[in-house]
Amino acid sequence: SIFDLVKSEAMLFKYGSGTGTDLSKLRSTREKLSGGGTPSGPLSFFKVFDTVAGIVKSGGKTRRAARLQSLKDWHPDVLDFIDCKFNEEKKAKALIAQGYEKNFNGEAYSSVAFQNTNISVRLSDMFMKASEEGVDWTTREVLTGNPVDTFPADSMLDRIADRAWFCGDPGVQYEDTIQRWHTIPNTAPVNSSNPCLRKGSRLYTSGGWKKVEDLVHKE
Image (cartoon, rainbow, N blue to C red; front, top):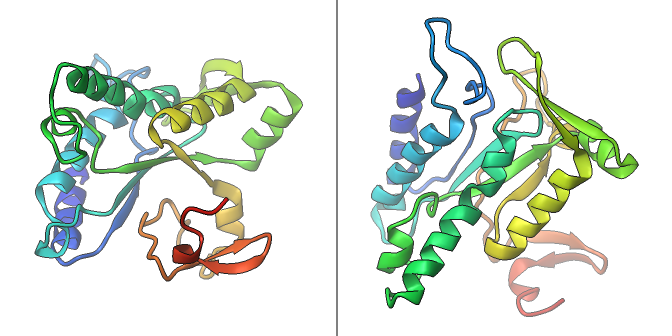
């Protein structure tokens, strides 16, 4: 079913659409398989999805595929997810320092992973409350719900901010707010979203609704 989704995404890119996929249902690398060994984890499959997005040009044109990958705050691999593009960005910078082209479509960035996807951590109200109160956060196994790792919640929020400052990712999506605002909640939860934002799209600011194109180069 994972690779059925790869095909579905490829077809959506072919006809010019974007996709959003959440991989939180995939067991983490910190869990065990029933037959022995450990799962590959969501990041290994993320690499496959990202590679396909780079191969299939969106709409048959030269524009990159619009793809967003998310992972929920309770997933045991969430810290690895937060760091994944940060680590690849450091590799790209090292290649650029050696003389490789620094253009985003150049050889340096083409040689590293996760460059065709925006990533976002799905943060719950419970996590945000834990961050505000300075208490610990515990990740849990996908299948059993058993606890895995415990760390200060605000340290994870700091990590997200630091990585986003360095390379633009990850972003965040507010899980519970999204479900509360769901327009057809009797269908299924909203698990992720298309990352596309057109210049004519409107955002709500302190000065009211503004078009994205009117906000460029402004604070």
